[in-house]
Length: 291
Image 1 (spheres, helix red, strand yellow):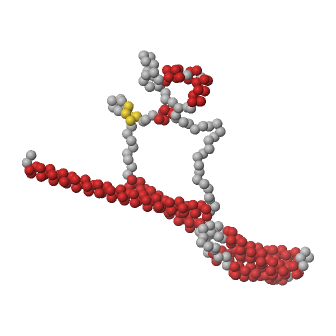
Image 2 (spheres, helix red, strand yellow):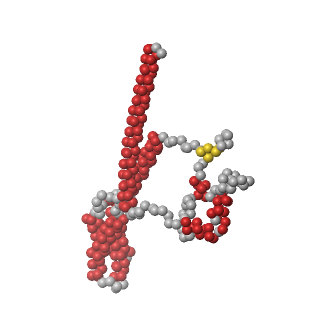
Image 3 (tube, one colour):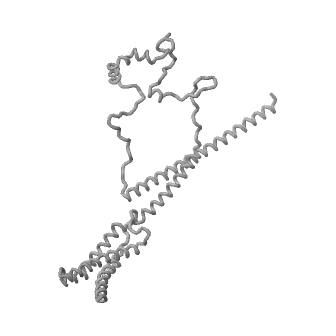
């Protein structure tokens, strides 16, 4: 071999070496990127899990993770392995056909009973456990059973992309759940001020109905004038105010909110102590107008 051929061979080996090094560097960079993507995705999933726990506690769902389902009475788990010593002894004592010699002769096939005609090399039927442990086979053109081929390896990049999309979808649904959790159960689309006005006005209207009932009772002599005046000026307005305060605290508070939502106490006090006397005045005007 001439010197030129040696030089060409050396150059070819050098190029192959550089290509191998470049491929190894590219593969190492790809693996680093995959590991970084996996770590980032793991952090996102952990944060999502914590946030879901907070949402569950906020809406009153705080249950332990579900464990394995309890076994039914009289039902035992299937175990593909051999029975225990006590069970084997009991089965042998109760059924003579399951004695060691008889069982071996019945299940060993041609290998267990040499020279016996009409018996194949394997038993005709496998037990349930042995059937589960048997390897899948594929028939070759020559008719010889060979192990089945494994499934094609998945691409980690594709799997990470699918996981990232699912994490994005989970974030979107989590944000929607947080928006819903920040709305109260009572009049969720209303502003806090409009909700407070509606609640205090409703409680004042209910107290106004009670005022009319007291006025009717006073007309028939069941309630005296002093008691009627006390309820109209102080009792029923105070009941309406505290009723609205409790309703806003119970149903007007979102499941997830930072701090205590405003209840507009001066506005509620003013509304309740105006609506009840106004209802009484409206009743008097109505009665005089009808007369």
